[in-house]
Amino acid sequence: MKFMKLGSKPDSFQTDGDHIRYVATELATDIVVNVGDVKFYCHKFPLLSKSARLQKLVATSNDENGDELHIQDIPGGPGAFEICAKFCYGMTVTLNAYNVVAARCAAEYLEMYETVEKGNLIYKIDVFLNSSIFRSWKDSITVLQSTKSLLPWSEELKVVSRSLDSIASKASIDTSMVEWSYTYNRKKLPSENGNSPQWNGVRKQQTVPKDWWVEDLCELRIDLFKRVITTIKTKGRVSGDVIGEALNAYTMRRLPGFSKGMIPNNDIIKYRSLVETIVWLLPAEKGTVSCSFLLRLLRAAILLDCGETERNELMRRISQQLPEATMTDLLIRAPAGEATIYDVDIVHNLVASFMTHISQTDPVKKEFLESTRSPKFGPDASKVLVAKLIDGYLAEIARDPNLPVSKFVNLAEIVSSVSRPSHDGLYRGIDMYLKEHPGISKSERKRICRLMDCKKLSAEACMHAVQNERLPLRVVVQVLFFEQARATTSSGSSTPDLPGSVRALLPGGSHGSSRSTTTNTEEDWDSVPTAEDIKALKGELTTLRLSGETNRNGMAKTDIERVAASRMKGLAMSKIFSKLKSSKERNGEISSSDTSESPEETKSTPSVSRKHSLS
Image (tube, rainbow, N blue to C red):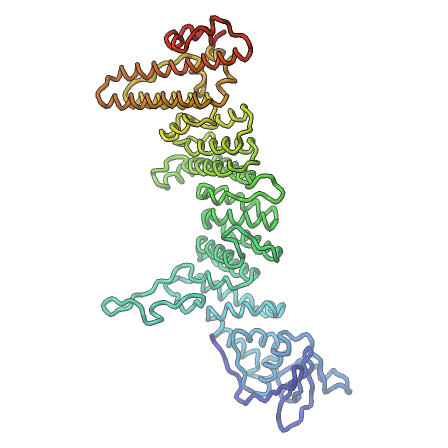
């Protein structure tokens, strides 16, 4: 820390209690200066010889009270006045970064100008500030912190602006010109402890990171921090990434619990102001702060009830960087009083805003952005990333027993148009929702399952789905069909034709009269399969897999196709007949001739089964 000593005489100021200061000399004091609640017993000549204000006060005071002055509004109070008084007496006084601003403001108040006496206090302090204080990184920060209690004097004397400019200029210089001695909130480097590794007797040069100044500014109050960052941004020599790192570090330091998504209950107004200021300071460039940081800011803004402008700005920024988010980042707690655990509406709005932003992006710019990404992503990589993100989010919020079907489906439908290679994540979310909400209606169960494309399930997901008793029967049959189609395609065979009644169950259904074929069994196909249904379908899938293995051992492809088609048709038609039969039994419409047919006969005579399905 820089310091300056003024005067050479010994300090003769003495204390008598907490409220009396006097100069111990052979000459009796002839003036009393009241500063606040402290009385200073001094001599007129040394004080008046350097202070124009004291001259005026003595000249204009009443004759009765000419030896006693009252100064209540001097900046810096009794301490600052004592520094000025000691300077007038020529006593030794030491100025440093902690007291120099108070002394400067008090000297201005007392009008200790060069016109009164050459080499007066104002001149000496200004020299000290310019030659020492504002050339030191640490002292510039300390001086700026001390200006808060000396407003408006420190502002009018431009001490604040000069401190800001000093700090911003040092933060903006090239790192090759920075010495680590600029910073003080750090551990010592190995070279400073004499433990630096040496190579051929030459010490390795330490490199200075671009954000070397970030931690030091975290000591500032939010209003001063805002002014420093604004000044740094105005100079335009610091990248947005470093500015973003400064904002991140400051928020983590000054907002307790921020990293854990918790906000302290005390001093809400203070923390609300902090969050709103950080949002206002965010660099304009996209990607200068992480999406995770923005989402934590949004969570804090909601908890602290920040202004709508700040929240909308965060929503806009997050939607543009949504592909960078993680599922954990999106788990924002619902406001107090809400039935759901998480605030699904916010995530819905973020995804909707992202999709709108992507659709409005200029095609040429979009092509350029995609070309700069890793080739493995390909076109529309951002949409795919967001779709996978929402799949994982759906699986997490599905555990909420109070989550309505409409919110689950509406969120999933926003990214339904995105063509992603796998629907395993979406299937996991659907399965979790069905597990946690067993009481939903058949129509709701059907609505949820429509979100999933069975063709995009992996082999492992198909195996799970075929055994899943929570899925409607039509979905299980669709999964089985596409698994069988995958097996025959991999073996070089073509997918066998299925009856229209089964075709209608597949995505897109069939056309013409085949849709009316399934009308009578619609309710049955949307019902939940029994354990026996699952066992039969599981056995069929195992058979198909064994057929694939046999093909690799030498079985002809035509034989595989015939076996697969026969088993698939037989099982599907037997399921249709069985469901239709049970439906008619419930309605009392089945005849003796109907009940005489066996499942074996049904499998061998598909034409008869078709008649039953049409009746």
